[in-house]
Image (cartoon, rainbow, N blue to C red; front, top):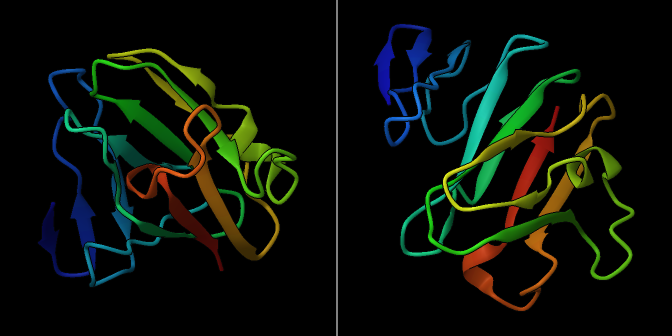
Length: 131
């Protein structure tokens, strides 16, 4: 990620042609986003979900990108109820090489994320902080 003053630009992810702009944050590991723009969480080729924490503003959506060779089932905590942030459950099944978006994260809160099919895998756990 390249930081240009108060604006940042995410590079194209794995040739999928997806990029996202964000503004306001100076720490590229926890960017903030204008309402309605997408931010990205990625399952890399090694099966690790990153960033481990993503800070967004209310109304934002997060795009999950699966660069691994294994399908994932993106779900909100807690397992198996998935009730903390139902907007995350809209991602659901994420096949290899695909991406899907959450619903609008409107409520200020912290949302845990995990792979429903591998809930104890620390590599597939992250948080989205809405503030």
